Length: 341
Image (cartoon, rainbow, N blue to C red; front, side, top):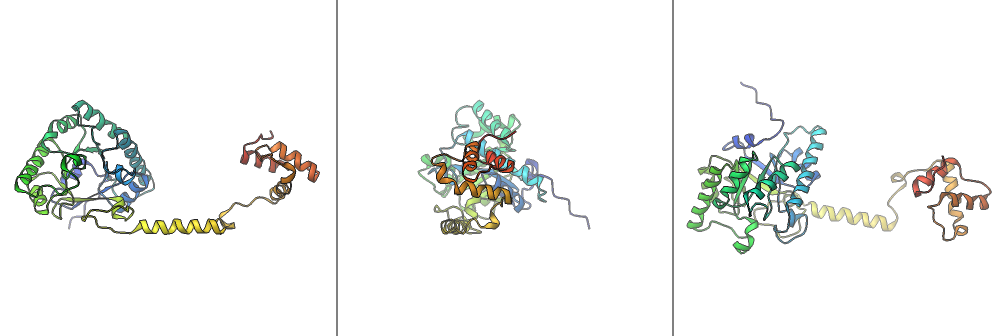
């Protein structure tokens, strides 16, 4: 028997394209370094830095509020998280980073689209994603011509929420379904290496997947796509908004987090946090000197501990001694006062 080929050191666009019809692709939408590290260690093939950032992290009601600067900021955070994860010896292939082009970053001119796509690549993305079908062909071609791989996205496209009249399943009628199939083929011809299918009937997603040579990534599109994507916060139960029916929660970390923070609040108010084990002990000499500071509080009046010289003088009057050099140096560093040199 032939030995199984070793896993690639990183997932690339050609690796994703080659998975068409093979092992299912897994994409996780994440927005920061901790999320990227978790997705990497769990074995995700791709991390989408999605414009859903607007709703999930920034608290907006839709995705239309984020800018290219917001997306670059969070793409860079994901990139740094993966660098750290790799440096710590994670034994998984490094995921492909997909940067989402936000609303109005590619809707004006092809020059704007290429420039904004380049901004995400410079921030750490390996490729970009954009929404829309045949009407985006020129934009896709321009970005691909600039050597930046593009992932398409059709069906329910959140950046079109106002035109669609809300978050509604697309392609239920025959005419709409035919248009989506045509859109998928147009994006493939324009150079997209993969296409997200969102919020479409499962039978339509199956038909589109069968009609294409490039992989499809489903979200609310049934089980017959070449891969699936879910939002990090949704699948972990961190999001308290009403989630769509296609979301499967694999944990309820939101409730766990509320409980943990609540116990911290209780411990602080009861005085049980921090304990001696969670505090730093002073040397005997320093402890004695600081005890003198406490007993001299009345004599100091309104003086603050920011003036280590004043503290030493006051203690000298009360205890007829000066702070040790160790204590003075400690106080100078702790409270920002002058240091003896």
